[in-house]
Image 1 (cartoon, protein in one colour):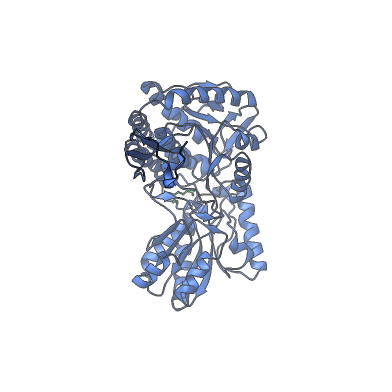
Image 2 (cartoon, rainbow, N blue to C red):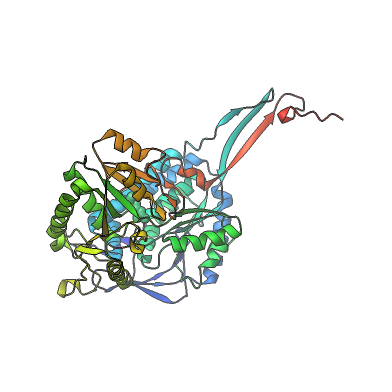
Length: 511
Ligand code: UN1
């Protein structure tokens, strides 16, 4: 399929910074964005310079003073209209996501749907920025807490969800009264430019001041550590690898700024002897090979009960064999597995397979890099199934590629221990029809992950829940539930209407 990129306002050469609807004539180096599918140049971007950043920052600071006093439900109305604009451009944007990132079109559409969904969520939330009221220990005193906007929120996003993660963060930030500066992945700048162009009409129509929704595309040499160090940004939200997250967090931590970290996962599926294997296999295959294994929620480990291990292994190999001919152009209707994002991702895939075999891992299926006329970019791989042990160094790491490791277990306690015996703690699940097992998995002695599911896979979370995880995943929560609180500052207020001074804790201090 083909959709004209001019529908999205993408030109051959694009400016790399915008304050809402005004584009800054950026003058940095040009970056070419290439299709992972065939390596061709899609379009180019002129990177922003430090001067461009300062210009944008001044706009953001100014805009904040106006935006924070717009009533929250009115900010929600802007978000509602952004959702409508995204609806109108769902196919165009889904297409560009697929073209620039390499996920299949169906998943590109799903990603835009996540943005639409979070808009709806945020609209409702804009009328629910509620604090609690507390009973004071002193007579005729009233206590409550309230939530105020924070200021400027820096949003660093990753290539694998090049538009949705901005949506989760910026829509909540917007209703909270914050303004955002978005620094997208250098692998997917065009998706960011397209989003900015989609929303700009709405921003103009709603009279949103320039500086509320900012985008900056810059090399990390220009805007890297200094972005994290910038005291004018009270909150930085990072989605990316644990390595990047640790670096940003340590810099932001130095200045006691706030972070929301949504970092790597090493997500396991426990397959019990009491599992419905048909359903399990369906979910496992999507979780492991969907998005070519490039979701932070992708299934990386299968912890399988010894009684069903042989059957799961055989059926999984059969399922993988049946979809090998469906690896290809992500914009072809029949394709289920697109390319990896670039040659570095392919190198990581290959290295992981070599290294895990050196440790004793056994390749049960796949692992090849495809070549030939349909695979000219060199980014296409056959998803791999590896028999391994959980403690192997490679199994302990997140390789952002379609590799799934199989390990065996005997008892549910052992399975849970294996699930938890990795540095990361994002997503996890158990397939079982046994209530006791599922409750154990969800209990305080169960999965230590931010997401724990029963009878559904590790990936594909809905926006209504809080999204994120523990340990090396960073501890942040984005998207639904009460994640909005991270974008606001809480203030506790006590009002004395007793006409007398009364100290807490019964202290007397007469003079
Ligand atoms: C990510 O991979 O960074 O749960 C986000 C999911 C998606 C989001 C993934 N809703 O798989």
